[in-house]
Amino acid sequence: MTIDEQINYLTERSVDFFSQEALRKKLERAEKENTSLRIKYGADPSAPDIHLGHVVGLNKLREFQECGHTVIFIIGDFTGMIGDPSGRSQTRKPLTKKEVQSNAASYQEQVFKVLDKDKTEIRFNSEWCSKLVFEDIIRLSSHVTVAQMLARDDFAKRHASNEPISMVEFLYPLVQAYDSVVVEADIELGGTDQLFNLLLGREFQKALGQEQQCVMTLPLIEGLDGTQKMSKSLNNYVALDDHANDMYGKLMSIPDQLMWKYYRYIVCRPEVEVEKMKQEVSDGILHPRVVKDQLAKAIVGRFKGDIEADEASAEFTRIFKEKALPNEMPEVIIDAGDIGLLSLMVHAGLAKSNGDARRLIKQGAVRVNDQRVDDERMILSPENGMILKSGKRGFAKIIIN
Image 1 (cartoon, rainbow, N blue to C red):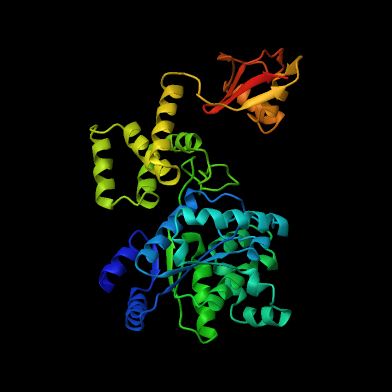
Image 2 (image 1 turned 45 degrees about the vertical axis):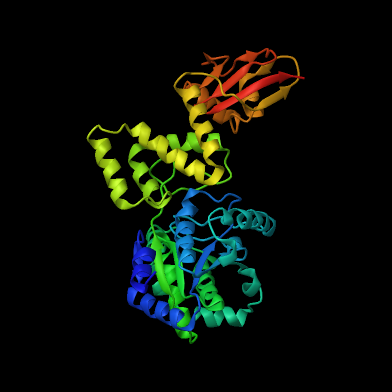
């Protein structure tokens, strides 16, 4: 690719970019010196799963790799114990060191479902952050003012509503910015909620005598509810490690209007194709379900394989269109004898608690052997092979011990 082609390709589908002229100079120098740019992307291992929300950034990183550049994927095992406050209305509970280490190991395995391993450096920011002493923290803090911190939209809202903001949360952007100095980043990517932190990295590099990184932000992807950012804590996510059937079923549940965003940023379908499909749905030429099926199969096929995607589609049709039972379902072993419906649902993993089970029953979402159940106090005498169903995708076969 020529430099102009690289710039057009790499900045496509981004929201903010600072700046194209700086990127051009970096690309020209890299070409002249036969080197690659260092593209920084950080993720705190706040949960064990990488989900489709992360894939937006990973896709862009892969595009940089296709142009010959090196990705520096920073796993924030140190910052994960602080908790990123970006976009949050209240203080986030920090994770324990054991939780962070376990999640970080899972991240290392999953990122290479998208990234090219040969063009990726995995770094843990505890490598340098754990060596900082209090004098270093004071020096870093001197490069940013309280006024700058309170200018952040999320902090400003919390301050105005008298919500507490801890000093630890003020330190988080400083640590993330310092990461850019340590790895000598040429470009840093992040979601739109990360813009302040990314720009602060530029300021730290300038203050410490480095060439400033370019900054690129990417859209935040709404989760299955179609309203809030995809997040494990909101249980509106699709994990890369989900079973193919679960992944397909979740994707078929998204609101129709969200399909186009998934096509653009997760499947990376060209804009002209997305607009064509959108118009054909609007004109009644294409049915939304057909378009959504194609989307779900494209995503499942990418991460699980085309055969698994076709099988998941067929299974979904059997269950939801033909009202058949799944070919495979979890088996739950219980002792013979009477058991309360609430207890059985929790034991079978179809409800998180008795309260959750009550809510599902009140919603009419619970069936025993395909018979709807409305009595939360029901006592069952389960038979071997009894089928318990909760919601659209929750099934369990009861096995008597």
